[in-house]
Length: 171
Image 1 (tube, rainbow, N blue to C red):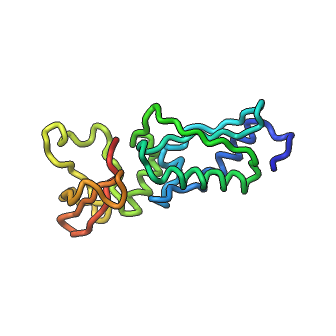
Image 2: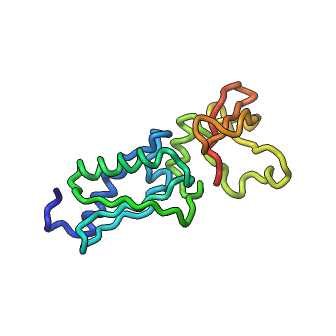
Image 3: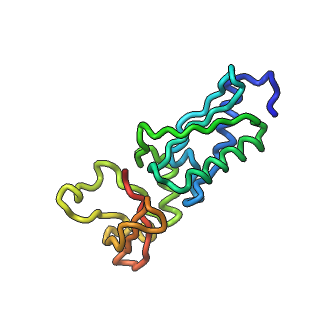
């Protein structure tokens, strides 16, 4: 338990530090902060409870229960006895919320990060996306399947190095 003399700001800062260790169970190189699903951390003085607000990558994301369990465990191990986890569906999560560090971690892990909103106009013309292979950097790639290891990823293959890779789909 944290000492009573700790201010609300110090509690929030300590909680954010603890939450930096909570990783996405489907992509363990990303923290919930990297993903942008950690929306808010606040100390509710009247209730003496720490509230953590999260937004799922999509409303049916099966990893959210595991993420909630991991958030609660990290915070309780760090001395927060009373924790409320609130799921906010609005505004809806977007891949724009991925941190630059998170995008780089995806690439290093072998997953193509989502294309920037203005980077790929192929969809406007009914053409397949042009993605950079996270293994060799080639843009000579093709989609194999619209879904990969999870529903939020598609399966691609590089036609130069012949390696398959996941693509974290934009939403």
